[in-house]
Length: 144
Image 1: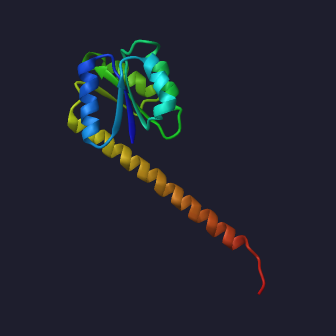
Image 2: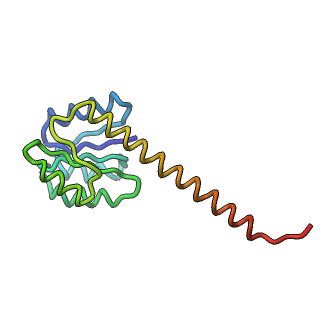
Image 3: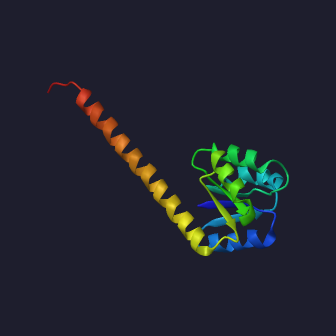
């Protein structure tokens, strides 16, 4: 999976990049929303982590816009002092929020939850296809 980290704090951004890369993710990090907007079409991330203090636009608006993209999971990143903003971000479309500093264990949990979510969606699609096929076979009338 591809992950885009938007975080103006270089230490935090680099720590996230290292943790995600160690988990096998392709990761790109930018410090502002303007650079993130430029990178989106080319990189097409599966996961976007947006710091709520990112410059270059309205982070909540960016987060909400990205959460509407199919097959894209969006997470808010906030300092511990801004946990209320993280909850507000979830109301705007974020799957969850992370707080600085983000631990490797929290990243592992996030990735495990995303993998489980994607497997559930894939399983539901397989069941849906099987049901459609069964309905089509039952509707066929034939003679031999």
